Image (cartoon, rainbow, N blue to C red; front, side, top):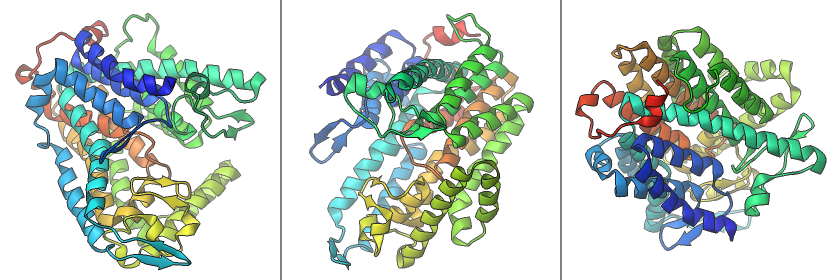
Length: 469
């Protein structure tokens, strides 16, 4: 009951914030709070629209709040005039998927029905809430250098808050063996896993991996602010201390990948120029886009990577080996569905080895987002989705050199690094939440509009950002 009430209350909460705070500050806080604090495992099932859970409700609340108090921002952005228009070819690709999967499949005593027009509708609605809406809102509500400051400041603050919650969950799990804030507050118990003898914190997210990538993103935001010499408002502490606090939270998340991302990229940002950081973000984005082809053509050096991982941690080597096996398994099963996918992996012959998959996601069996989407939607659908996430990185790369201020370059490069990092993590791990595509939309809006503030739709002050100058 508490969890459902919190979800319902989140809509008026968002409206209230947009009425009191500048649009970028309110948008950043609503998006971050929705992903990081709303309860998992509950939602409202609506006709046609399906299950409305925290990720859907977060961006519905954000949209309503913006429409009530920032309608000019939404109207001037022109929904469907940016990269979110890729939803149209994604829908067309879904039609292709349905057309090649219209027949029922009988496999080892299971009869899987064929797909039809209703599946196109369901899948398109699912992608609207997952991709189109978060991206558009990010693009519409973040346009100026003040907006960029506000976004990174909000992420840095979120990292500090989440570090406190991680310390509570990990600390109380020592005497109580298991202590989960999601269960205490919302009655939802996530799966319990241990790393290095101590519980892996979940807080209010779906998995410990999502906590780690969230903390790594917040850490990179802190480094970007530190490089630009922008302090947190209202808290008179040095950003080096803030970085240390957030890094502690990242380490306590006990995820090797997240710690590796945060450590390596923050080090890169500290000791190189923003243009170098931007180039690395572009290279990582190209790797993500080309990775499916490299794996299918046998060009990716996974054996060398496994050997390298084994030198540091045998458990990580086994985990990576399992992920590479899953990829090989799916690739071998694609056959003539290579371009358009199987629609649902439960339709793939021999799919019992993969766990149970659903139309919009999956339940166990597979880890990597890319291989999940490849199996469901094929190469065409997968690359369209990756393009939506990563096109803003290339747009920001072109913009970076035209920014006259080194401070703005530092901040924009930090956001590029955050998105590229999260995209890389989609190769071995899952989607988790829609925050990356929201940030990607923000990066697009900033790359297109920074430097044109005189023509921006909003004249409102940005006290939070101004206080941090």
